[in-house]
Image (cartoon, rainbow, N blue to C red; front, side):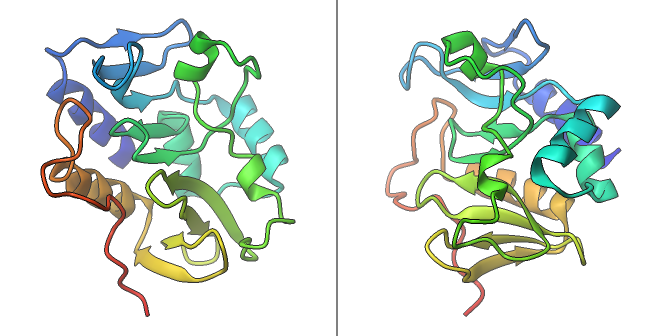
Length: 197
């Protein structure tokens, strides 16, 4: 229910903005043509059903913990603030057309390839930050979410769970990026301040 409520409130916030619902049911909130003609401030990708959840699990070679399963049954990944923070999901259409690109998340399978040097055992990589390429992981043993350097296994930030991560990061970015998708005056970095040393 937590994610359903968050998504409902986010849609309500932009109800009077130029939004679209795509052919596959993804919702794109607030067109920001200054960034690009088909750019949107937030993208909420169409939720997965049980069989699609199984497909996602097969691609990452892990069964999803219940919290992640509920997230993907609410929204198949998302994109906040024109890609400033994005959450991976199941990419069903491999075409590189504009429509396929705007109505689907970045593919969760690739960053979960265990041959990458940054890969930590028993973690599912669920997202990333555009600013520095740092990745977002989910620890399947304790449910904590963390931000990690992509060049090594260094953990930079940590949140108690996925719910806390999404709410906190949306609120933090809300103060840094305007409704047209541009950084506020004086803002350089859009990643959270490193808290783990």
